[in-house]
Amino acid sequence: MVERVGAAILAALASVGEASLFGLRALREALLPPYEFREIARQVFEIGFRSTPLIAASGLAIGVVLSMHTRASLERFGAEAMIPAGLAIALIRETGPLVTALLVAGRVGAGIGAELGAMKVTEQIDALEAVAVDSFKYLAVTRILACIVAMPLLTTITDFCGIFGGYLAETSISGMSWELYFRRAFSLIEFQDFIPATFKTAVFGLIIGTIGCYLGFTTTQGTEGVGRTATRSVVMSSILIIVANVVLVRLIFFLFPSNV
Amino acid sequence: MSTPAIRLDGVTKAFSGRTVLDDVSLEVPEGTAFCLLGRSGTGKSVTLKHIIGLLTPDRGRVFVHEQEVSALKGRELSEMRRRMGFLFQNSALFDSISVGENVAFPMRRHTGWSDARIREVAMARLADVGLERDYQKMPADLSGGMKKRAGLARAMALDPDILLVDEPSAGLDPITSGEIDDLLVGLKKKGTTLVVVTHNIPSARHVGDELAMLHEGRVIAQGSAADLDRSEHDMVRAFMRSEGSG
Image (cartoon, rainbow over all chains, first blue to last red; front, side, top):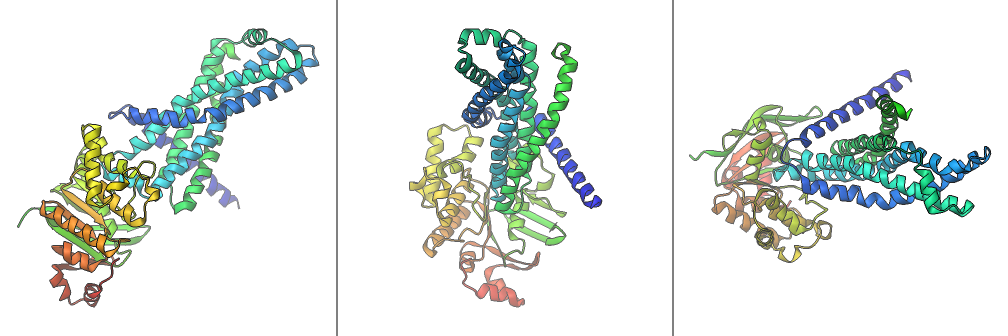
C-alpha cells in the first residue's frame, strides 16, 4: 500500500517535472524566430474572447453572492458602508484571479488537452511536422502564450463584473446609487492591489497552457486517451494553480509589503 | 547507376521491446517508384516515417539525397521536409480547416504566393485527385477514400522531389484507385521519386519499378515484380499472386 502510494506520488512529481521542462522550452522558443503572431492572435481570440461569456457571468454571480455574504457579516457591526470596499478588495486581490484561473483551467485547459490529444492520436501533429512545420512552436508555444496574455484580461473582466454584481445586490437591498457604490468600492483600492494580483494570473495562464499542451502532446491510447487527457488537464492545472497561488501571494507580500 | 534519393543503412527500430524494423537496408534511385509490400504490422509505415524524420532509428542510418536524416535538426530538417510529401495511412487531414485549406496549408507556410495563386494551385491539386468540387468541405464531411485523395493532394502541394505514400488505394473503388495509380506514374515520369506502401499487388505492378517485401521487420525479397514472382520464398510468391486491393 505504502509502496503504491509512494509510486503514485513519484509518478505525479515526474509528470510535473516533465511538464515544467515543456513549459520552459516553450518560453525559450517563444523568443526565437519564426514568430507565429497570426496563430497567437487566433488563439488569444479562441482562448480569451470565447471565454468571456463564462467569465463575465461567473464574475457577476460571484459579486452578488459575495455582496450578500459580506452584508450578512458586516451588518452585525453596523459597518454596511464598508460592503463595496470589502467586496472590491476581496475580488481584486484574490477571488477574481483564483476563480478566473480555475474557470479557465476547466474550459480552456480541457479544450487544449483534448484538441491536441485528438491531433496526436490521429497523426495530425505528425502531419504538421511532415509539411515542415514545427508542431511544438505552432501548437504549443502559441497556445501557452495566448493563455499568458488572456488570463490578466479575463481576470480584469471577472473583477469588473464581480463589482458590478455586488452593486446590483447592494442596490436591490439598500437602494445605494451607482456613483456612491463605486466611490466606496474603489476608496481603499490602490494600483498595487490590482497590478500584482492581476498579473500573477499570467503565471496561471502559463500553467494552464503548459499542462494542456504537455498532456495533449503525450496522449496515447486513442479516444479513451483523449478523454483522460482532458480530465487530467483540468485536475493537474487546478492543483498547480492553487499551489502556485500560495507561493505567488507570499511573493507579492514580500515585494509589496503594503499589501500585507 | 543514379545516386539514390533515399538510402536506409541497417535501420533497426523497436517499440516497447518489440523489434519492428530489424537491420533494414534499402536504396531508392532518384526518379523511380519503390513499392514496399508486406502484411499488416511488418514495419512499412514505420519505414516511411524514418525517411521523413518523424522517427529516428535505434540503430542504423537513413539518408535522403545523401543527407543523414536523423542528424538534421531545426531549419535543415525543415528544408529537407519541404522537398518531400507524405500521405499518411489515415490521411491525417487537419480537421479544423477545410479540405482546400488543408491543401493550401503547406503553400501558405512555405511560399510567398498571393492568396489567389495559392487557391488556384490548391484547386489544381484537388482536381488531380478528382476533388475539385470539395474545396470548401470539412474533412469530417468526406468519405474515407475522399480523405485519402485529399491527403494525397496535400502531399503534392509543394511539388515535392520525393513522395512517400502510405496505402494510396486503401478504401478506394477500383476506378479511382486506377486513376491514383496513373497520377503516381505521371509524377514519376516528371522525375518525382516515389516510395509507396501498398497491399494492392496490381497497383504495385503498375506503379513500382522496384518492389520489396517486409516480413517481421526484415526485407525478405527485393527486385522487380518479375523477380518477386520467381522468389524462392513461399510467402512472397503467395503475396504476389494475390489480387487484394488492400
